[in-house]
Structures are given as C-alpha cells and as structure tokens.
Length: 366
Image 1: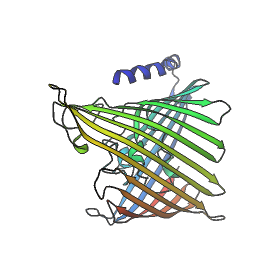
Image 2: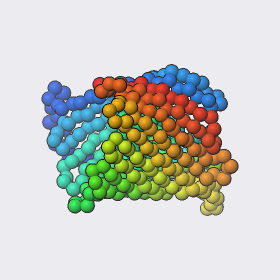
Image 3: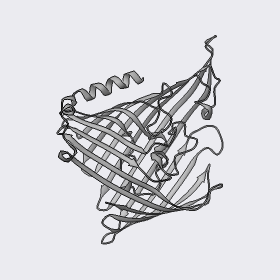
C-alpha cells in the first residue's frame, strides 16, 4: 500500500514540478496565517476525572499560493495538552474500532491542492476525511465545544483525494485513497498494511441546503499479536485481517439564523485470524456499528447569542448490555466581539457513561 500511495503522490506532484524548480523567495509569495486560541474550564462528573482549566487549542492555520494552480495548507496544534489527536475532544468513543491510533503529532493537517485540470481538483497530504462536517469546519466556528462521537469513525488520514464537479447537476463527486494508519500518529508511522478508500456524492439543490451520501472501506493486517489487542486480540505469528465497510449520509441546512445538520454512518467490521501452517481461519470479531447525531442552532435576532442543541448516539453492537453511548448537548455561544466568543455547553450522558459534563470555553482569533 505504501508503494501505491507513493506512486499516486508522485504523479499528482509532477504537474507542479516545473514551478517548484523555479521557486520564488518567501517575500514574493501570497501567504496567509490565522491563529485561534481556545481556553476552557471543564467540569466532569465521570469517575476518575477531575475538573480543570486548560489551553484547549492553539491552532495556527497557514496557507500559501506559490503558483496559480498550487495551494499549500497546514494546520498546526500547539496547545500544551494537545497534539492534534486530543484536540478532537472527549467524545471519541474509547471502544470505537476505527478510532485514531495515537495523538502525539502537532500537525493536524498538511496538504497540497492542485487545480491544473478543470474537471478535477487533486488534494495530497494529511487532511480530514471529507465525510465529516465537523472535521472540515474551522475550530473557531464549531457550534459545540466537544466534537460529536462521529469523529471517532471519520478521522484524519494521509493520502490522495480527487474532487470532481458534475456539470449542470449541482453535485460533486469526491473519491480518496488513504494510508489508513490515521494522520495523527506521532511516534508510530506506517507500521502495518492498513489502508482505506471511499467515495462521496455531495448534492446542493440550493445555496443553503446540501445532502451527501458516502462509503468508505478499511483494511488492516498484522501478525505481531499486538495490533488488535483491543478488538478481540490475536496470537503472534498468526495473520489477523481486519475489514470495515462504512456507509453513511448527511444533511446541512441554513436559513435566517437557523442551522440544522446531521450525519449517520453504519459500519460492518470483522476480524479474522489465520494459522499459517494449516490455513485454518477463525472469526475473532464481527459487529455492526451505528452512529448518528442531529445538531440544531438558532441565532437570536438583534443579539450576539446563538442557542445550540445536539443529540448524539453511538452503538457499536458488541453484545454488551451497556456498550452504547447517548449524549444530549445544550448550550449557547455568545459572540461578544467580532473575533471573540464565549461558549457554555452542558452534556447529559447516558449509557456506557452516565455522568454529565460542563464546558465553558473562550475563543479568540486573529
């Protein structure tokens, strides 16, 4: 898989090689930088946790246009407690079979956008998968302090994406091939044969309304006996193969201060172990995970206040009586200055965890 991705990346970059060979100096380039600082107080009733005041994020976004058809984008996370992985927040399910594998890296995103061809835009690098509304929203503009549980399935990753507009249909088709180890991995780097690929149709019948349907397929193999310890375990020397097929949909609607969006995904996953000497295969894991949420908000007219509510349900269907998690979030955003906002969000938990949480976050951008 590594060779395949390398070849695709090289092919995507050949078009810009002539420009790179005659690169201009820094002073001649069109470079933008945006900074978002977020400080938060977190009150937590869950066992083994403590209330704390922390620097939730210090996100630096860099953009550059070294040539007409090349754009460079990077998102860096510099908060002390962070790394880009933990900046997902607290709601990435700990029992999610597709969750990210680590969180040491300070690079959330770093990718190149190539627009040499009218019929396709090529993206290459580390970026959020396109199936998540939240991961593709600037952290300052997130309507809730914590992400939904959906990001535990969507994730960030490294690879190549292609965005193809469909003429006269208000629709575009996005397809991607990803390395599959997760983008936010820090010390661990491409330690297996995992990869995933997928496609998404995004239909926008009007300016303030859009729909999407998507699919993504993930594969992973390992014979060390270590990689799948959290999924049912396997024995060193025996080949374990993990497969996950995901199908989902989403909707986003805005009108006169009202905003409603939501996403649904179903993932069928299995883990098989094969004894090399005999070829005997054993099924270690088979489950159907479902996750969905609906987020609604309303900006009160002639005020700087936005009311927010979200219902979020994650059910991994492991067979355990208390494996699912439901989170109802309610709160408000107060945009008391043009580039400063205060967010107050209460999360009411039930299911696997039933203790509640409260977040108060101040965000400033410049």
